[in-house]
Image (cartoon, helix red, strand yellow):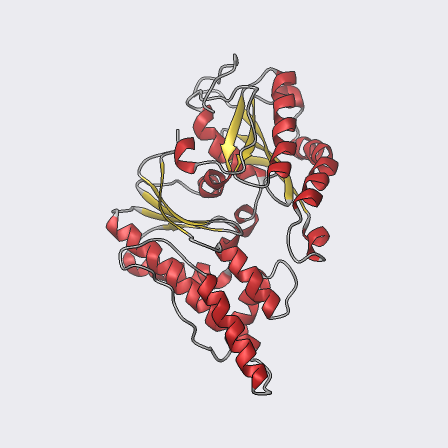
Length: 351
């Protein structure tokens, strides 16, 4: 995975352009980033409307949509950046984790470009991308704690130094995003349901208090399956009584439970490991309630907080370029036999 092709990265004083490709799930994205931090373009094609009718992402359909979109998005990213393929110094691509068929589309495209242009290829970890999206908006101070909340991942990651990842907590069942989507379906919202639940929770005047799953006293892991079941039980209990469920109070209760647990554990981890900064990352980082609570807790703790803007929280290629830059600056390039890996270890990917 950390092999090298024959190309060599430029000196630290030279400007360089990385072209990055992200196709891990249901967004096709290509970005051009200068020196690992300056976004020249970040084009994203979402498949939400396609998958909405199925209530979730259908892997085979996602793969086909990536095939249809990748060339168009690539051309648009280059045009928006005002550069041509000969200007590209390196190609980065999401190697994993993700849907295998979707990942393959990006990996094949990236390998073809790297070979044709005779430039370095960098296989990149998707979650490293979410974490280093923060580096596109500010300086990361180490050691740092990253709270990763997305559709497929909920993790607390310790960054002891640049590019060194250590997972200290992860979900044992549903990720936060999955829990939001399942609860949203129960509340009769369309896919993806997270933004609808967040909005309803913000507007609610009452709250149905739901359980908090703290697990073992010293654990940084998460579990949301019981919380999802508690929401369904409240809905069924109301209907059995002939009452209309109070969806807004339920949405608020669900969101408050999630936020209490994820922010509580993240702050505790920051204190235990002496973090100098908190990073919020992943698609659910766009959740207004979560951003507000974590901001408040970090302010109380005197802990600096970095949160990317919403457009850099969801899957995008600029974040892949930001993470790939860690490898670029060290000359850690991938070989052309790079394989898509749907289960790729973040810790093993560390620089």
